[in-house]
Image 1 (tube, rainbow, N blue to C red):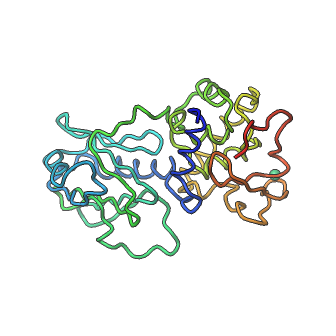
Image 2: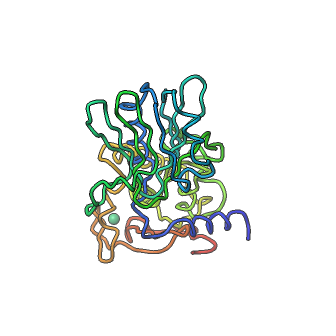
Length: 298
Ligand SMILES: [Zn+2]
């Protein structure tokens, strides 16, 4: 199996259609902004790191020993990975939201602010047993990773070097280079976190629809004009998802179902598996140009 095929296969087994609502860059960005606005410079007096699954490979008490007495000094993000810098040259605290984790920050006067994965319509009331990791502050408030599905992750000094440039920071020239190289389906390339960090399944479909590019078009057949339209679509889809509260608010997302029609031209939406993921596209406006079909269709 070649490296590219292996990568597509890896994407296929790590993501499933049921998990389409997982946090992508915009959701993680709302959590990052929440921490930056509400949780910095508050002295940490206790840490509940007793969930050994979420805090692996650390043993209970290790995060507490490393963080107690410090403050968070900055909240950073690349793609879907988020981390906080800590005072006195302390370790970075990595917080990954997994498939639906949310950050809850409680102020000194008991007000709770939330950010992160989308709230499910039938979300159950906040249960303490789903608090997977907690920082307690000297002022009486706290920062909690709330994660019903327990797929989030907290760790010290997370590795982010394997990630490509953040999708919100990538330059047009960088983007054109990474989106046209090689011969994979363009959607698989958008999902490849080592090339560009932060685009998940829903955002990829939204970007391709906005740019009127077929998801299975081979990267080496994209023209400069296609790459430029994809770049502008990436920028506008990200901006709008951050402003509206998540990738589920994208313009084509509500049409991703059998019988759905394109909200722009009214044509029938098509469905298939591209890059190992459930994919929807407009049958009229996202047609494959001649010679754009991938050598192997998944
Ligand atoms: Zn259309």
